[in-house]
Image 1 (tube, helix red, strand yellow):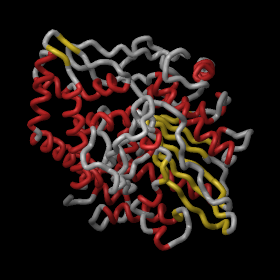
Image 2 (cartoon, one colour; image 1 turned 30 degrees about the vertical axis):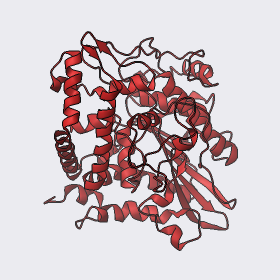
Image 3 (cartoon, one colour; image 1 turned 60 degrees about the vertical axis):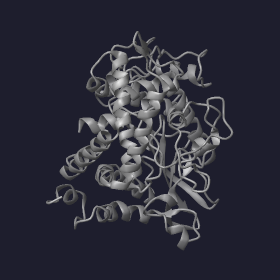
Image 4 (spheres, one colour; image 1 turned 90 degrees about the vertical axis):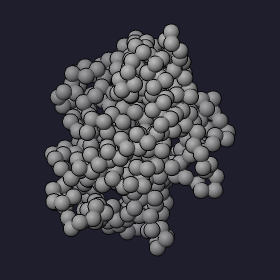
Length: 471
């Protein structure tokens, strides 16, 4: 399991099938229009991917405020609840390239450094007052914002904070100012906040929350701790899921063995830093190289030469190829259906309570990792979606038809793009119905039944699917 999680959470595992050529380019090299695109356009999509361009999309460098499709609905629909899944923002690497100097990135938050957000100083000031906040252990021992002059491994950067302040402000403008999801005197039980035990996820959640509810009352904020990156709570034991994972690892390994150019590249880099190839590969150099690229810091050099962009392109191109094969072989889909089931089941339960008129947990926020969002995207049938970039957001909206109050619908958005009709449970709905949304019962049926049908076999519930014999 170790290899798979490293390659997923701790590397970039780039885009799926969406490969764009930048046309109108913003100053950071990523056009705001193309940055939103996650589904391929067969007419304009080039057949060959530019690995550097894909990497810049993954960096998600904050630029002009993006246009998004959150909150778009006919006037006779009322927003009932919102469920937000985020990946933490930009972070310092989790690995060091052996025998090289760590990239010098400052993780303090200062106004005179780009990227900047108008609420940055107020965020720092508010976080400094939150030391008495009562979070579930062990979250109460974590720092509430990054503050090291040289970032620690895996620490959230100023870029990461700004990314989520921006996310939060965008959601505030849509869900609070426009749709009045929460009353002005909102209470603690109207929020549901959950994060893994990493400082980067807690701090990302707080940054988004501050953008969403500026100067919130600390007494109303309670983050729950989720020990598993799958957010599977009490349903994490699933032997069949682990078997899918082992088969997927094996597929990755065999693909890597076939790539002689990749092996040659690792060999060249190992000579530069003067370590065995195996040690260099184990240090997952793409993780550190991405930090250099996202922060515009040159790649490391030694007396034997420099790691360069050609090395980066080879490793990145292999990851893109790996992603393509991953979709074709469907092993990851099996892993995802079982891996994402507990969190999706929890989400529909929360939605169903809201349809009954309950006013608790109207805004749910899960601050998580790429290894959280990626299986959920795959399980939903969004196989063409880009791999979760820094500060990616996946949102489930629940709506009520005011003209037919017993009818509820869902919308699903990924990085601001409405992907509802790309999901496996709603892709045909708009062909049969003029309604602009997907009936809630489609999602409920998918989670309660169709996820198990998609796995094959005769299982009709999560426990049986996790323990079926002869897989």
